[in-house]
Image (tube, rainbow, N blue to C red; front, side, top):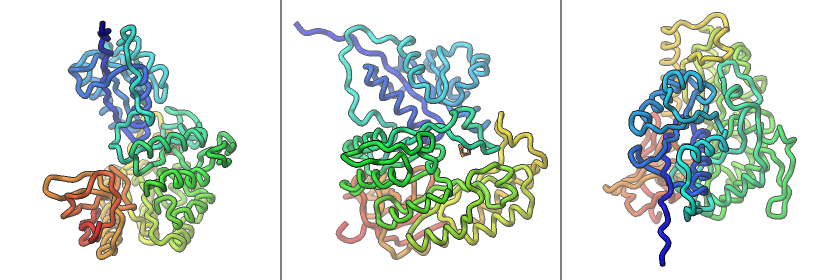
Length: 449
Ligand code: SF4
């Protein structure tokens, strides 16, 4: 006689915020799936809904609160996790009916809360989690979190108070995860953390055995080994959130060799020493411009992406002009700019000389104009070249959208292709660049591709 198994509970997930939060969501879902839960793509089919919140900026907090409200009205059974977990009281005051509130990377607590809210029926026949875990990003790229927390105390940032000091993962565990992801179809590994260049400092760079070799818990060793893991499928390894410490120079030759992508995401935030000091930024003493020139000598194609904050308290017109001149010299490939926004709990809020809103707006417009012009010129120089492009989507009209090595998903530009109906998502293919605008490229698969 056949055994009729009871159907397992279904969990819905709303994941807000940055890629680091997305990785937390993936971990939580992987654990729940391995415990036998099923996932629900909508509110209606879920026995309980998890909202993984972001509390980095006040606007992100408001978005998180709205998401909690929506999940409550659509489903009614809601568990809150993520950065906003630190503000449980505020959440409870506004939404007394949430079932449980847990903090960022409290995986066991949030999984425990799901078990309490929607217990597994006895004898559930499950354990269907794929070896690589469950992913919320498309199959062809994956975020790989190498550490959690941060030892710095930048004046505008509350991440250390939300997520604690740096805790690095073992290098062999990261490499094993990378290997599984590549086996499961990942073509691009996006290395993330709060501070990638500090990886391993907390565990004294302790080496671990990996495929018969010792690998130190150090950014350079890890980047090299990740490059080797991705190489058999021609895959890409991209480094995010790198601070310009001297040892960053060691990964540039790996880029020149083609082991990892010639791409560095360095959140400089400002160039003026005065503002960097007020911001309490790490590694601000380095002669950054000189080093950028050296990096370009070693690896001419290196794309440098950065973010900048304008209107930080104490930023004078002179500081801001210095930043614009610095950008002229640095010729960064990709730049994101933000107007300073006080975040509840950040030390910067108590600094004197706040910049008036109108001045912030005016500086923001000036930096955007400057960086768009630099980006447009850099992209125009790529017209006529054939560049490798990873395909993110193929449409019904034989067009495709992809990214060059200089473009990380979601945050950088795209490459729009014509006559590309034969390509598949995840292909890495040579593309002849035909046109460019301020942020994107346009091209056609190179003949034979
Ligand atoms: S380096 Fe600074 S901005 Fe980045 S997470 Fe640490 S404290 Fe925040």
